[in-house]
Length: 134
Image (tube, helix red, strand yellow):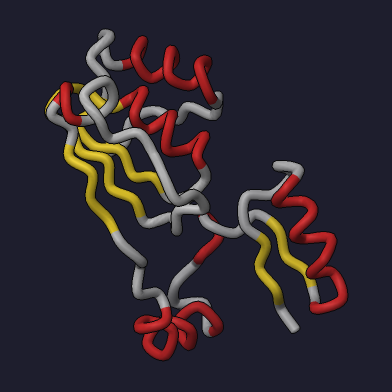
């Protein structure tokens, strides 16, 4: 399991992860954002022979996969859309009745009127995920 949290991005994030892993990089990277900088950071922190698994919907059409990025380091790229809608009917009642606490995912709550501000907070990195409670 995960033992450390690195909040730095880009070259600083890559350096921090490399330092934590003795310069080797991680065995597995979960890329859950879908933006090119997240993909580039995933490539930078995964070790040779490692796996990058994407569940973030790519917001780009092309990404480097050639000899200098993935192929030459024997890095496997996997992933696809997460079927989250398949779990809504089963999990939503447990979230609403408090059986499951999604607090580790959501760090802010808003009503419907606050949705635009919630999106802005996520864009400005003031919130990770905003829970909308009508």
